[in-house]
Length: 497
Ligand SMILES: Nc1ncnc2c1ncn2[C@@H]1O[C@H](COP(=O)(O)OP(=O)(O)OP(=O)(O)O)[C@@H](O)[C@H]1O
Ligand SMILES: [Mg+2]
Image: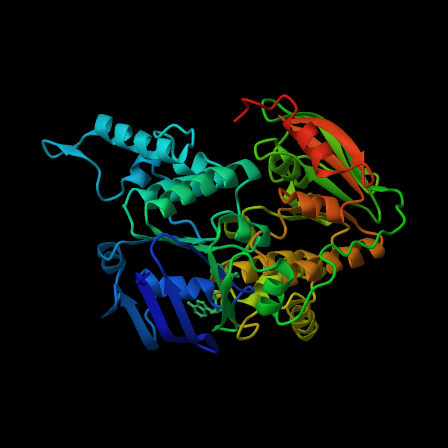
């Protein structure tokens, strides 16, 4: 079969880093081609050159066998290449419909034809099976819905090549299945699909071929049926023997106590403890209220009644400063919005929380701070040109590592992690788990929210499950199986979304 797209010897340098250092890549119509590689390997950079966002320093791109230069997004669109980026490209203030039809809203007598616009938007939403009112402003939606809207938008361009950069990172199992259905349909219609993921189990489920990138180079092209440990070896250059290296510590007194926490219409009567030395997993479907509870505990959102105690002392509600002072930390789900200062460098971002503390004491030891930041970046294997690199220009997974690193450095007594390893490669995940182990070994407490069930099961000493804003049950590590958790999580959730 002839290739729709051929990439030969692609190179791209950024200040201080060779992002791509010789990449070959072939894409055929009617295949799902997975791009695999560690955080910072160059996956997003490669696809940005196919979509006209970046320009190669060297190398050639052939479309339908002809050498082509893709200078702009319009060039890409004309060639039939549509891209769903890792960072969302939606305009938060605009409605779903306006986002879907941006730049091509239907008009009548020169005026916006709203009725037609909502109708067209509804059709696009139906194609991906997402139930959302097209009149809703995008910023009111959860992250999973935003992703589905991105997908609906890309599909509406009738692309021959559809590029998806980590589309499943923010989706739940059911939504992933929905997405795979759509991808299979498109593939069968002859669309060529580039698919980036850090979830290895998805590769065999949806892929046909895999191109592995390592340090900016394409190092292998293998069938999607290649065993996972072989894929890992190609990707990180070594094998990983234990994916979830949880080392249990003896549980001490409760460090975090949540008592009857209630916020009308969001969550109700939530009570649980996390003891010193424990990792407690908080499982549930998207929309079950886990993030909302975490934010309320941390003081980022208000609640109506109930109480939060840290180390036996009640903390005032709705006050992040007081929560931090009491030793609480939160790694938020939405890292772009809440976790990072994108325009600042790695050094500053890693030091954000510690600095806040130190400045209160009136004395900042810059040199010590730099050493701590460098050590943390090294432990988490952050791919960067140096501590002075702007966080905006780090790869997605490396940005996530900075959000986590910041809180690990802050030495919070109780750390709440909301989807901590989203977008993180398999090797770096193990590093993060080991850092969690060292926290609990030092007598700290960790509450971990994750939609990645194997992660919850593999790393938690206890699992509490939420459904529809309520506690659905608690399972010990021994009782917590995939089925047991799902049974509680789904409970009476049938039509909840
Ligand atoms: N605009 C930029 N300026 C400077 N460096 C950049 C820029 N864009 C990317 N880089 C660097 O290029 C390298 C490759 O990044 P890229 O985003 O392609 O990685 P990735 O494989 O997509 O990783 P991830 O899995 O974390 O998303 C990284 O070291 C990154 O910091
Ligand atoms: Mg990327």
